[in-house]
Image (cartoon, rainbow over all chains, first blue to last red; front, side, top):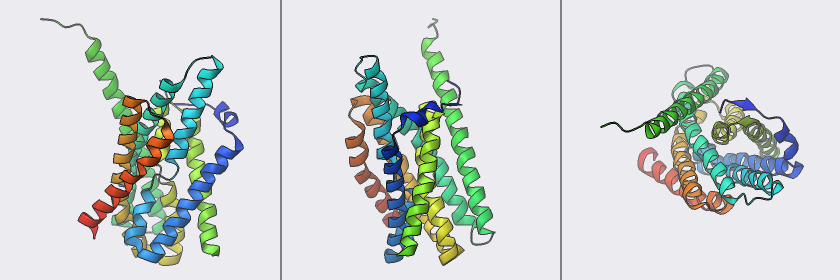
Length: 153
Length: 113
């Protein structure tokens, strides 16, 4: 499947689902700040990579998949679990980009323009995550082809 | 108090924006990349930069490495468990947060303290 945008998802999502994500995002950002103030940046920094809204997002993915199947009067439990698993696999690839983001900031921010470093680190996160996603996709396709190929003696 | 409120508002907005991007993109594995976007980090670091300076931000980013490794293990475990056992998302994702805490603080204690 090629990467594409589905705008109708915006209409499927309810207002309280957006509010929930805003609440979780706001709470973890505020908490990270409070922890850094109280225990120092060494501990506070850990929470910059906290899976803040992942449980909420996964629950929404599961709910939407089940609703889709229910409209066709089918049980969507398995399909929903599969969708959550696939999204989590994508998130695990993104964390490698997240680690690269942190590495760029850690090593370069003391000696370079801080705002440029933040922009550069974001670019590194995006580029590396997408590149790794492509590599994983091609590898999965290759493995599938190998499995389907006829065995020759 | 006003600083915490500002963090809450900016954090909420940035995290929501990345979550919306994750909703819009298909396939799901690609959209999942936005689930581990540096949304909290961008909101926090930009505010911290103005208040505390670059050295403080560098120290936070160093610890963030441990958090990111913990997130990788967390997301991999969630993916594996939901794929193999078909359990519901909320219990799996919420209980696995304990794993994140264990790995993040363990790495911090062993490698960064």
